[in-house]
Length: 207
Image (cartoon, rainbow, N blue to C red; front, side):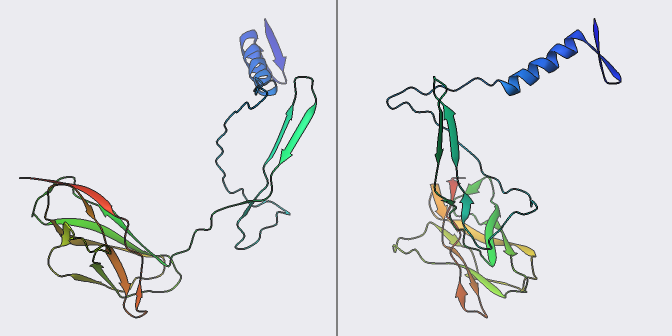
C-alpha cells in the first residue's frame, strides 16, 4: 500500500515512521515529581541568541533574563513559577592574554627544557614592549622550576589583534610533580604588571 503526499509517493512504512516521529514530538513523556519534597534536577546551557528585530540590548548589562517554569498537576491544574532577573558573572576584559601553548611531554631533572608561550594583543592598538620573568614566590618558598639563563625575556611590540609565540628556557631542580609558577608579564612603557600565568603542573623524571 502507498500514500500520495503532494507530488511524491511514500510507502506505508515511511508514512508510519513519519507519524511516529511527529507523535513523539507532540506527546513527550511527562516528568512526575513526587509530593512532599520531590526533586528533579536540570542542567541548562545558555547561548547568546542571534540578533532579532526589536530585540533590546543594553551595552555592558549582565542581565540574562528570567527563567520561567510551567506545569500541570495530576488533576490538570496549571502552575507557573518565574524567577527574578538572572545576572551573569562579569568577566573582566584583558588587553593582552598570555598562555602556555606547548610543554615537553618528558622533562628530566636539571636538564633545560622549553616552554612555548603565546602573547595575544586583544586591543585595537599596538602594545608593548614587554618583559617576561619569573616572579618570586609570595610565601617565600623556594621554587623548584626556575628560568634557565637570562632572567628577563624582552618581547617586541605587538600589533592590534596579533599574537607572538616565544620560548622560555626553564630547568627543574626536584623530581616528581612540580609546578611552573610565577611567569609574569610586564609592560615597559606603561609600567604595568599583569597577573601571573596560572600554575602549570609538570612531572620531572630522572635520567
